[in-house]
Length: 298
Image (cartoon, rainbow, N blue to C red; front, side, top):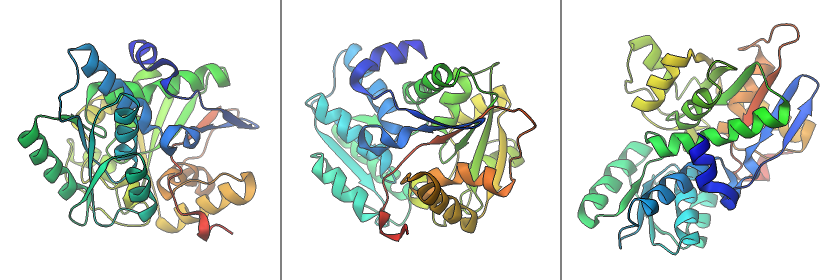
């Protein structure tokens, strides 16, 4: 994790925390490109540069939007080409930002899995570096650097609540804070990839749907994240779409924080009692992304 932190250095922002009594909100939605994904993208791409350089074809990523933005940004900063495959259902705001970053955008299928398949085929045809959104060691390590910041900023926390899609952020945080903080994985009922994996004893396909599918819409949790989560004892809780919507509204109305629905899932666990802290427990919630249309926030 420290290697990743040194490698990405000042290319990413040290995002602030907001303290609310014994609750800390890590405001990672203020990161470059609007999500934590920039950390992992830079770590993977820079590791490839260290290992001999990027292919002429540049970087190809598959994404619901946020990972694509991160890899497009990292590629642009390093003077490399970027192609990003997203579902046809990707929010227009994310597609527009991808193009603004100079990426070639391909919209394929109705969910992330179809975009992923098309992206891997394109990688095989071109020899480009495949920027995996979550199931890749350097990506997970890069995401975990935010946990090191949080620990320093809050002076240590007992529990970290984090939304889970493919699980790269969960894995990075759990590995970074192993033995020092408990991690709770929060998922909407419509995208329960980690919850389904725990029930099955291995990563399995899970339903993909609901308000947070654009950012938490992986069909199954990654092999690396699952292994790290089992080793470190990550807990799993579910929240409803209605809970997610209410939590997103609460973050705006109470704290003027604009976040996407996937981000709000972690906060929803506290508001609904899906996770109830014990007396005196120091809890942090990762506000992981803000690539959303804010017009429905009132």
